[in-house]
Image (cartoon, rainbow, N blue to C red):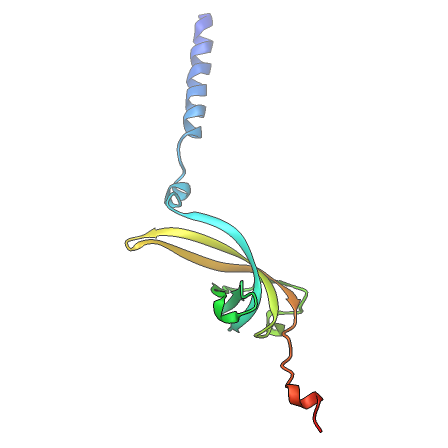
Length: 136
């Protein structure tokens, strides 16, 4: 047997192994146009259903100058500092962790969101009428 035959076999083997390193699996190729990132936002719950939660944020002193984001809820999400999502009410302050994915569409890029978890921060501030405490 020739001493070089062993090297040729090893060389062919390494060529095959390295070629697999550069082949893109179909699942990665399908996601090539997508950009996904996990984000977190804190703010006031402005609306809530079993299917979505809307968070008003950056309201400073004037809620009319703030922003709002709608985050879909699909299935069960983790909830901390509250027993369940049912305990969260409009006006409560929460922090929501969500996945945000940007996908190309024929009309341009579109953003898709999905809630992953929610942390209760504090209860809604109760409306107190000024005349009730100082009534004569």
